[in-house]
Amino acid sequence: MLYLGNLPLNVGAFHPMGTNELVLNRRLLNNKKGFEYQKHVFAILLHEYLHSLGFEDEQQVRKLTYKICIENFGKNSAIAEAALTGPWVDLSEEDFDVIAPELNLELIKDFEKIDINYII
Ligand SMILES: [Zn+2]
Image (cartoon, rainbow, N blue to C red; front, top):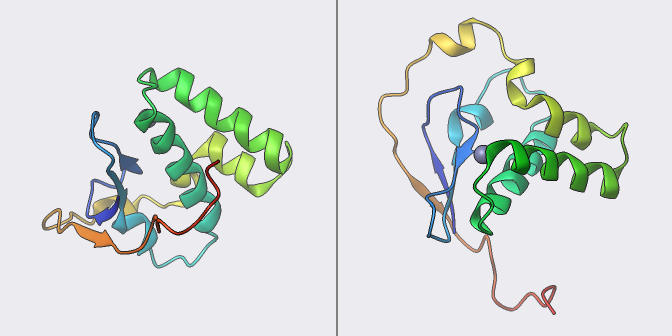
C-alpha cells in the first residue's frame, strides 16, 4: 500500500518494517520547481520496496537500488543518476525552510491492482 505524507524534506520515503506500506514524501512531489520527479519517485520507491523485502541495511539497499537501475536503464540513465544522488541535489536551501504542519497521510488507491499478472 502506498501513502503520501508530509515528511521532513530530508526524508524521501519510509517503510514501516513488517508492514506492506510505503509512505512517500508528498512535499518532494509538491515542490514548485517542476523538475523531473518521476526518476526520483522510481528510485525512492525501489529503495523502499527493497526494505519491504527484508533488506534492513541502508548501505546495502542503496547499492542494490543503484545496481538494479544501471542493469535495467543503463549507467548514464536519469534513473541511475537519481538512485545515486537522491532528489535533494535539485532542491534549494529555501525548500528546506518550509515546515510541514502535519503528516496528513493519504492512501493512493489502486497502486497495486490484484488483476495485474506481472508476478509469476
Ligand atoms: Zn533506506
